[in-house]
Length: 285
Length: 298
Image (cartoon, rainbow over the protein chains, first blue to last red):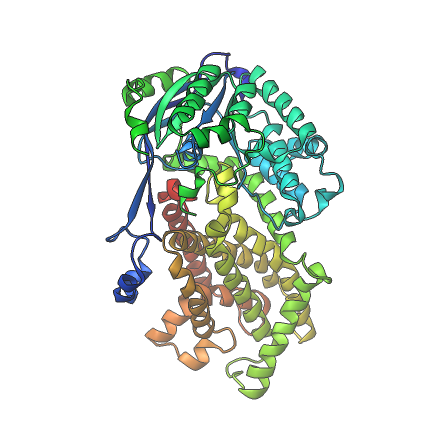
């Protein structure tokens, strides 16, 4: 766990990472499809003619250290979420390597646990997957419920939760174990102000305990307020890596120059910018 | 769109695979996104065995939570099913040849078969249905099909308690061979787990093949001697022997030999049963492990 590692030593190493998705649905016209035999259709997940490849992450290398909080910024579809999932070990790289210290915990807007199960069961499942024993998990339940603020809903299936509640519960579960590497994918956008403050506290606590925090966001202000360092992704490439202030400044400046209208939206009103679509659109669900 | 990537000037320094490997070894980082070696995979699976139990018990509870009678259905369902089959095969079609206690023969067959078929149905979808969980947490993926098999075992226990009751009511007298019932059920569980792991990988690779699962189950139902005695109807020739010693029929016979006085336990059948369990579980585990790094891609 995190306690064993010193601040400032590497916690994540990414070397020449490439991720190529195969998108099958986009491949052929209905006419072509009708021509294919039954057998071919059965095996359609095999790369046959016309499979569209999406090169979501291109030759990305970086090292993250213990105790760092790193923002990943970029436009929709720039490969931010894909990069994060690969670093968490949830998507196998097409080329390149990813090394990580201890357990990674990924918290995404779309990451449902098991919707048909109660909040309590989900806490037990999530906490144990993150390496806790059943006893430790059970002892954390009260704390998690309180942090997430879900109260009596704990015994109801998660399918009955509002999206904010579910997001809060996921955040509380992901951070209960003090993961070595915490990855947050736009999830903080769903909470109310009080929850945002609590989650910011929790993030700095994890950093103090030598964990590493990654935060994907379109919002320049969120990145600036939480992160010290930032990575700027554009069309799958890592185009800038440096102190959050500088990277965010360059990012906003780029779009202020190139597209006056769009940048006005992204830099002046970051708070209202709650776009449900992140780059996971590429990820061929 | 394209001009953005070109005007950034210098490329960021890349870290070569060799450097990365050195640095990772120095700070004892582990590589992710690759399939772990088989030995380590077994170890990881074993270390998460209590997590497996949590997953399984949660799924067992979730099965009957969306109706009023709840867990009572775990007992009611098999009884109703047995009644329906008895009506068709016991009264209308009369497939009771070669059996003396047909009701016990039929119910033990149905309960065991339902245990197998429901594991196969839900186990095959265990990866595809739980992509949310898989994309959120890192754990050996074989825990998904295994937990489904375990949940079905837990859910089958009330049915088998009912079965013992039916067996007593229909006139069987308790015998030492009844102690073999748990052994038979655990053996069925191992066969189920193997089948679930194989099916889960196939369905994940080619979802279309999921449509073939119901057909397969229907076929198995009619060739495994659920409601007729294979020996009496298919004989003991090559075909009869193949039917009798395939994994599903073997499982059914093991349960019957434990409970019914008219079928005393035979060593050959139990050895074949243990063989199936060992082979299917091992093959299933290896087949599943081979694609470990691919699950959850979409």
